Each structure stands twice: as structure tokens, then as C-alpha cells.
Amino acid sequence: CNVVLPASEIALHFQRECQHHSVRCSKCSAKVLYTDVCAHFETECSNTATPVAPECERASRFKDNEAYLMSLKQALEGHINEIKDLQEQLLSDNAVNSCQLSIIDHCVDSCQDVLKKLRHSIDRIQEEGRQELVQATSEHDDYVENLLDEVFRQEKKKQSTDIIYSTEKLLKDESVESTGEQYEKITEVSERSAGAKDDVAEGGSGDGLVKAVLLKPSHQVTVCDSDCELIIKDVQSLIKQTLCQNSSMCSSDEVCLEGYCMSLGVEFVREEFIALRMRFLLHKGDMDDLLLWPFIKRMKMCVLHPNGQDVCEVEETVCGCGASCKQPDESEPQQLFRSRERIYFYTLYRDGFLKNDQLRVKFEVFPP
Image 1: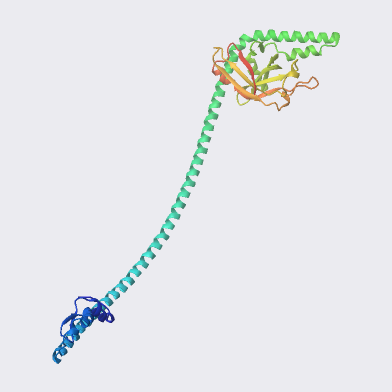
Image 2: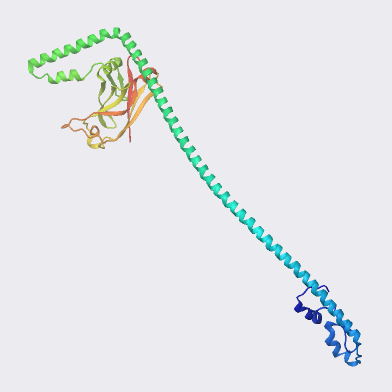
């Protein structure tokens, strides 16, 4: 049956399991399978006589069995040797594979170390590159900013030079025309001053008259009460005064805006360029007890173009925190409010807002 079994199980296999091995019955000499020997003895063999087998036949059977067992033993030993060889081969292959796996593991660890070093190097290079880029960008931005500042300064210097030349030319052109008018005004002021001195000599009450003559210019401001518009005349004289004294002011009489009694005006200030600032002075009025104090409003100063369409304006919120915004009191002098926002005169001159040596300025008041 070609079954391979341990030696201890061969007898059991012959007697109870295998359907291929047979043996001759010792009683009837019948050929019976090993698995059917017991049944044969109980049934068939008991009814028949058992002839005595010859001694030679029994010896031959023993030899056959011995030869069979020897061949079986040799086959088993061959299988055992093959199994041992295979086991040794497996052990050898396992040792080789273990050695190779150890080498591979070592190589992987080495590669991981190299990759970590490369990663650290790449991160360091990226960080250095980023810092260099940031530094280069910062230096470039500073250079561009300095360059733009220099260009802006040169442009402002050029504009200032052009404005000075234009102003000088305009002043020279108008000096001849205004000489007679200025002479008449000076003569009129001198006559008023002389009259004031005569009044002082006569009655001793001329202080107020002299003060009124000095503080009320006769040539600067005209008020249009309909829309709180000021017409500033003799602008070139104000510009010349500003260049000499660093500032000049002109203001209106008392007007009422949103119930507040105030004097509105414009201050010419000499900065890097001549600038126009909004100014106002609050006065005591009849409606002061009905108004909200301190004075908190949005003030807008608009310079109107002679064509009636273009406007150059600035707006400023009066926060009411200064002494100039408190409720006027007759016992204390009221302070003057000057805006931080400004309009540069050269823009007005360049864009044609100046006509007949006059500027039209409009003031508006809005809720905060």
C-alpha cells in the first residue's frame, strides 16, 4: 500500500487498517487479510480441518516476512536520511537567511541614519535660505523705501522751487498793480490811527478804537451768510506775510452754525510748504444753554473752484476734549481751535483754485 509509518505502528496497520496485506491461515491454509483474521477464525476456519503446513513452507513465509521487513526498514532509513538532509538544509538556509536579514537590518539602520542626517541638512539649508531671503527682502524693501523717500523729497523740492518761482513771478507782476491800492489802504489806516490818537488826547477813551483798527483788516475776508462761505481776498499778500512771519490768519465775523455762535477762518502756515488750516473761535450766544457742551462736531473746510464744480476739501472731527471746545464764558478768554488736517497752497495754485487773487472757502458742520 506504500504507506510510510513509524515502526511502532506498522503491526497495528497490518492487523486493523490496511486492506492490501494478507496472510495464510494456520488451520486451513486459506489466504486471509490481516484485518479479517479474527472473523475468519470465528466463522469459516472453525468448520474446516486445519492441515499442518509443511515446515519448508512455514520457513519460506518467515523469510518472506523478514525480507519484507528488511526492505521496509531500508526504505524507512532512506526516508529518515532524506528528512535529516532536508532538516540540515533548512537549518543552513535559516542561518544564511538570518545572516542576510541581519545584514539587511544593519543596512536599513544605516540608511535611516543617513536619511536623518540628510533631512537635518535639508531643514538647516531651508532655514538658512529662508533667513537669507527674509534678510534680502528686508534690505530690498529698505532700499526701495529709501529710494522712494529720496524721490519724494526731490519731487517736493522741485515742486517747492516751482511754486516759489511762480509765486515770485506772480508777486512781481501784481506788485505794480497793487502798489497804489496798498498805498491808499496804508494811508487810510494811518488816518484812522491819527484820529484815534486825537480822541485819546481829547477824552482819554481811545484804547478800544485803536485796538479795533489793528485787529480788523480791511482787505481779507468777506462773509456770505447764506451758506457760510468766505471769500479770502489779497491771497498773495497773505502768502508774502506767511513767508516772512511763518503764519497769517484771516477770520470772519460771528456767524451761527447749528446754533453755535463762532468766528470761522483760515490760517496760512509755513511748513515744508505753505498750508491752509481750518480755525474757529466759539463765542457766547443766546442759545448756549440749549446746546450740548463741549462742542463735538465734524467740521469740513472746502475750497471751491471758480468753475463751480471742483472742490478741494478736508474734514476733521472735533472731539471736544480741548479748552477751545468748552462753553464760552465771559469771565475767561476762549481759546482758538486749529485743525490738524491741511490743504497745501501749491495744489490750489496748480489746479486753478486761485482767481483774481481770491479763494472761496466754505465751512460745514455735521454731527459727530
